[in-house]
Length: 420
View 1: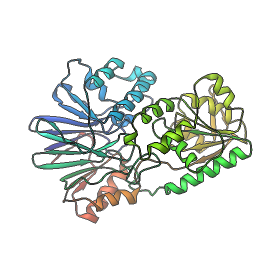
View 2: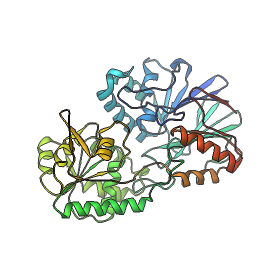
View 3: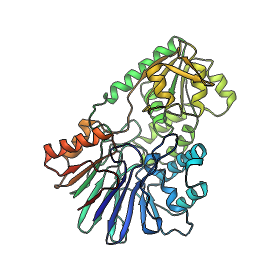
View 4: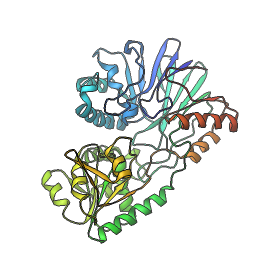
């Protein structure tokens, strides 16, 4: 069996791995690296691929899959859970709307992808010629999966993005995957310990109370898929007594999540939390909601577009208001500028943000300690590929794994082939 790293090598973005066994080729993810002009994984010929497994809906894992379906008669099967397909459709459609000029596919190719989709359930083996695919719960995003690939008597475990602690919305990742020969593991926070989730939750709720009780409005820009809903659930779990509103694409994501209660940690609590949130669906409502104390949750998480831009412009002018950053802020984004420089850009002019700004860690990824806990539970003596992290995170993590466990670990380069 050969595994080729097509993306996510010493970087976060464009995750893609090619598995080859006896002339059968399958892809594990095929994502994009989002920036002004998106970057893509190494090209593969769609006619050579039997199937593509999408671990979860985030665009750095799913965003380039429609490229494989330019031919309506494609023989490729797209494999994922049903929530992954529905959320991927939502996010890819939005990406086409925003970045379509730079993309080598369009909406009709996304539709073709969905027409070739096969919904998989967790822990059910699915054969692709002589390769067997099994999905396990990843704890990272609704419907998200880790993957076991079995062929030639060998077993590969690909973590994708993984969260073994779970969240208010999701159950923890399922690590009962058996003995493995190759581990492809994310390295995002391999060199960092995040603030404990309970502390982040309490700190956010206290900040929300402070802002609203001084007659201000707290604006929380959050990723539309899961982060926005998790923040609403956190506020409800701590009995936050004031108005909570939600806007933008997060509303569509919530509808999808409500359709799949089996994938939620506590469907009843989730449903109650989301149903009690006020939905903002018009400009009239937006203009009204910024005139009374409360909390507003709205994408985009990095403030690059959507209704978040309106709220930022309106609420940054008053020192009574607050802004809670709960999503990763990429380099060059308005969110990073707000965090580091306290600056907001209106009509090409930068002005100082008067609202109080705080950042809270709500990552859906494992911290360093939790990544090592995964390795502690590994059965077998696998080779290890450290991916989906910056150069230092991947390289140092591989060195530490080799030293601590004696596994043959490496941070692969783009295009590198691993044989097991």
